[in-house]
Image 1: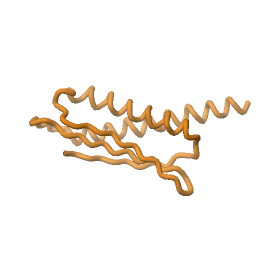
Image 2 (image 1 turned 135 degrees about the vertical axis):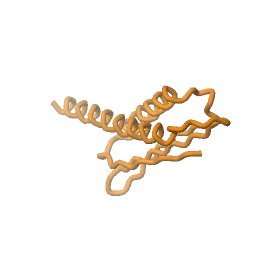
Image 3 (image 1 turned 90 degrees about the horizontal axis):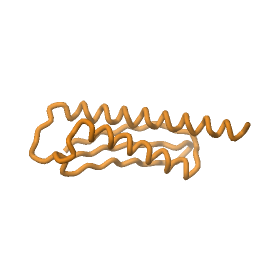
Length: 106
């Protein structure tokens, strides 16, 4: 079993915005993983996205994958890249929401 995590601060957003961001990130990560690893080799796969709110919102991404009896030599690299995909998806979605909020103000 391999696990990787990333934590990124985000500005305050509505609950609907947060749900939209979480869904977008999860879909992006799942598409990336399945493009690199055949799903029939995956025994268990979980993408966990956690939001914590204190002074600002904090997004934590955990990716956990268990494979059937198969060795994938670059699994750690795939997971690292999946986190990068998640990070880029987060930034992309936040920028889209910021642009949309700015347009709504105009």
